[in-house]
Amino acid sequence: MNYNNLITEFIGTCADKEIATIAEQKGRKVNYKKLVKHIKDSHGEIYHTLALYFYNPYSKQCKLVTYENERYIILVHSMIDFVFKIINDEN
Image 1 (cartoon, rainbow, N blue to C red):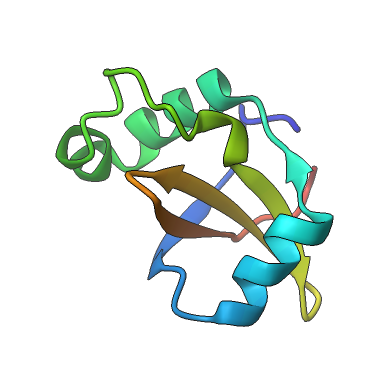
Image 2: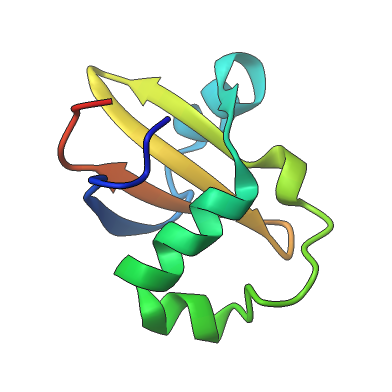
């Protein structure tokens, strides 16, 4: 996934159980370091609030998910799924 021109919108925590289930079963792994850099650049407040500059033992659970023709990135942190909707689908 190319994060250079990626535009995302923070949706919230994984309120839709179906998205979480799809992420566990069919989600594709994402590059955690690039994802964190994207969040830092695009969603600075979330980056600092979650203290993403510290080690995240859940980093390998972060996924790219397609659900109802929309694409999402799931950032797992502190056992909570944070959902970002991909706005531009150039990737």
